[in-house]
Length: 288
Image (tube, rainbow, N blue to C red; front, side):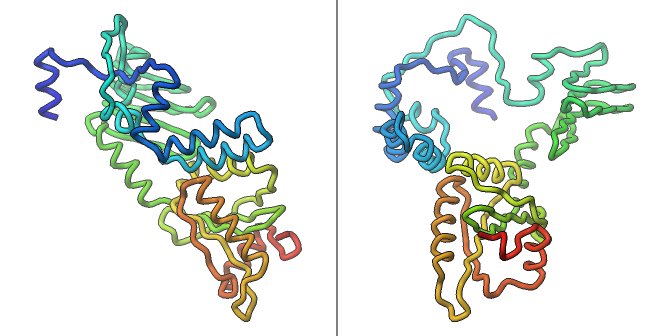
């Protein structure tokens, strides 16, 4: 805003390009001092490296680290810092306008990445996936981004508001219902409005590291904001051995994905939910 403009116009400030050079011991000591919880996770990974528990410990500890910019975690608090002026060109690739600067423009001011056909279009930035044709006809000053799971069309003048779109999507994330099994795990995902749930294919368990990778990717791809794990409770209300296993799985799921986990009593599963599980192939025989 205004302060940034004043800094820029004064010519007395450098821009933080986010390029850091340090010895491993230096940054680890800084993390130990300023972010002890993060350091503890890293230390656990280092201690397990090269052992039989390496993959399992890495998945558990790395997944439990709370994401934080190095600027906030260390640089704002550290004193022994030297700034060096960089003798090369640099661009903050933090917005779509930078794509035009990096990849150039055609005679009409368009920047295209991917399979794009532009007709009577001017000043547009268009990015598509390979094999998916995007055609623009008579468009002006637009940003168009297509990925396998979403498409963005925005006025270039509203680029800064894209962050609000992402925030809105995060707030309206999906809920994943999980039917725990030692061999197969059934999963159903709600729509963004959390009104309807659709079953996914059963997940066949493999190894702790591969299971962790699957659920992390699932949480990111589907924008999962909560996992709901079913508890197979006896009709008397007593929890079975399967219930205890499901609770341990829920704890592992939270530590792995950092997504909140809640549990539901399967005694109160509706017939609709049962039909949905059966449709996903989760018969009682297959939920081992």
